[in-house]
Length: 250
Picture: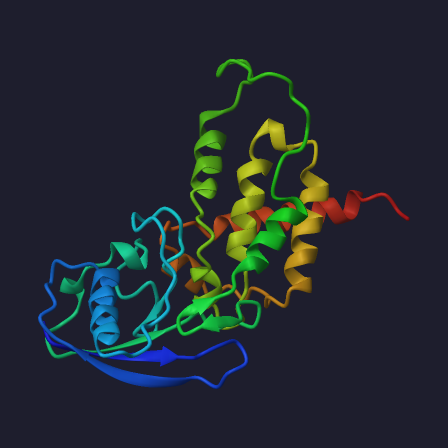
């Protein structure tokens, strides 16, 4: 395959960025998207040019680091996968592929295609955990949990925090991410004790960091590589309303 890559280049967070065209040739349709970028970078290094900076880690669709905006879609044209799982057979020979970083104020560009997603870490630190002392690990059947609740909690916990929901949203909303992290505990008895404090703190932190509000376009669900349902947002809203109503007055 012969392709033209239109890639966003930005030397640093404070620098002015621009799109630069790079031709690549001889790309196998069985290569992954990141392998194709590796080929490009090898050619740039051989020419003495600066390689394109992009995030990656596991390359197995688990970590969510490979966060690229490809032809106007987070993680590219395929559905339910991360960038590292996408193969070049999804593109046509001779095609021009536009590659950008996430575009959101809370995700500032570090360099080229890399963005700082530590805002998600701050949201998790605000309450996305269980701190109750439970002693030793109990037997699996010691705490009765309805299978439906367990399944829904596991579905929510599948969120890898890649930020595709933010990138897809016209408001750069992090509601789907926060809702998934709230739901994975709200559905389980272990998470009930801190439920009110958790949802208040996480939503407050999300707002403080500058993420936008949800307007129910469902773009987040459509582009989520783990296909997290927007029903978790409804659950988070219910949890938040209850938390605000029952909060002790200061």
